[in-house]
Each structure stands twice: as structure tokens, then as C-alpha cells.
Length: 348
Ligand SMILES: C[S@@+](CC[C@H](N)C(=O)[O-])C[C@H]1O[C@@H](n2cnc3c(N)ncnc32)[C@H](O)[C@@H]1O
Image (cartoon, rainbow, N blue to C red; front, side):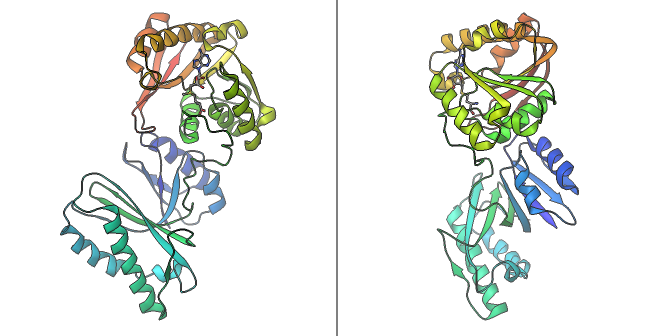
């Protein structure tokens, strides 16, 4: 069976590793492509829902290349007609379906053009095989056929995760205005190398995504989440309750610039998503926050402890971190909310 997963661009390797560890088989990916390709004999769909790093999963039915011109769709149409021979296994006269197309890159045609072509071919193929036309239902379909066009790459699959991305994990009762995707929180914890029995702190936790993912990942870690805004701390507690990790995380109102007052060289991992300057407004204020936070984080960490942050202010962070005494042990660009921040792992 061939499966395709969509992931946040920049964490394909982490998702690939998780998929292989949890489901077996062979995986491959291109960096920053937003996809992981997976070949496996048998797979438990429940295990797919438990993956922490993926957005969506599909059974891959067709993959090809398509040019950017409207004329290129003629060849694609022919290929689809000869390739979708088994589509009636998934879409029968008793199931309704919708085609959902995601298109990235520069093309003469639109997502709607693709959806229309694929929809027409599916209807024709199912009718040929069963004698009955399947029903299109764009609002509440039984089956979603997902098409993904990224530049010249074309993928078509049956969605295993419905219309909602798994990154919208069910625990988001409180919606923080600048929430981090849980998949990126998982990636940050993995890159930091958090383990059971360690002290893990997010001193700017907002709606609690990072501490919650840490609670889901570890049985016995000592996890703390703080924010200076009491409203976010109340929200984070609600989210933790909904996710089932409430008893595993200590939440409180505190200023990240004074973290060392609570923890004096006691923390193994500080994993955090501070405000991005671009959203904060004043660059002087944000730099002061970063400078003071980095200093306090350094004092709070055990020798060898790690600070892992996601930030658009990475040039400033890398410079200041060096001045303070941190060693940079990893950095990478990811895509998040239309921006390209870096995840930076620093070691004391
Ligand atoms: C980008 S948001 C974090 C979002 C969070 N990762 C989530 O998924 O909900 C940054 C958070 O930092 C908090 N913050 C800003 N300055 C702070 C400070 N000095 N001390 C503690 N929290 C602070 C803000 O209140 C905000 O909730």
C-alpha cells in the first residue's frame, strides 16, 4: 500500500522517522516539500490517527507530473482515465464524494479546474463499472478525494483523515490568537531530545500547546507551562483538561524574564514559542524581551540543558545566545502560518 502524508514544510524528516517507528515500512521525502511518501504492507488506520507530526494522510492512487499550462491538462486527463481503474473500490453507488484540490505554485489553471476534471472522470469510471453515477456532495461527503498539486508534482489520494487536518487536534477548546501547530510543538520537543523524568518548561506557553504535547509524549516528565497573561493560562488549563494531560502539567502566571527565580539550574529543556516580532509591533521591545528571556533561561537550565525556540528573530537570538554562552546545536527553517521561522536548539 502507498500512503502520502502532508506535514508542515521543514519537519519531513521528523515525520518520516515517526511514521517508520510507529507503522513500519519505507518512507521517503524531499526537504521543504510538505510531504512524506510511505510504502507499507499493512497499516492500522488507528495508528495513523495517533501520529503526532502529520497533518493529513491519504491512500495514494495516482501520482504524476503536470506542466503549468492549461493544455498540459489534456495529457493529465488521459493519464487519469487510464489510471483510476479501481476507483469504484472506494466510491460506490452508495457513497457520496467530493474532490478537494490543494494547489501550490504558478499554473494557468485553478484548483477548481482540477477538481472538476477529476470529479468528471470519477463519475464516468464508477458509472462504467457499476452502472450507477455516484453522488457528489461537497458539504458532507462520505469520501474525500484529495488532489495535491505542488509545482509540477501531482498526487491524488483517498483521504484517511477527513476534511480536517490532524494538526487541529481535538484539545483546542481555548484558541490562542497566535497558537503553534501541535505538529511543530512535537517537532521542537523531538529536536530538543526531551525524555521521561526530565524537567521540561515552556515559560511563554499561551494556550499550552507545547506542554500538552510534552504530556502526550512522556509518561513521567515534570512539565511546567507559564504565561504572563492569566487569560492564556486559564485557556491552557482548559486545553490540557480536554487533551487528558491536565494532571501531568503545572500551569501558572509568571514572567519568562524571571524564570530563574523559580528554577535555579534545575531545568533540562526549555521549549518555547515566544512572540514573533513581526506580530508584536515594536522591534526594540521584542529584542529586549528576547535578551532578558535568553539570560533568564540560561540561569534556569542545568549545565548541558537545552533551550529550543521557534522564532522569526533568529539572527538576533543566535547572536545574543552566543554572547550569553549558549552553543548552537541545531537550526532549521520551517513553515508556520505563512511565515518561515527557524527552530533553534541551544545548549548551555
Ligand atoms: C506566540 S504566543 C505562544 C503560543 C503558544 N505556543 C500556543 O500554542 O498557544 C507567545 C506568548 O508569550 C506570552 N508572553 C509574552 N511576553 C511574556 C513574558 N515576558 N513572560 C511570559 N509570557 C510572555 C504571550 O502572552 C503569548 O501568550
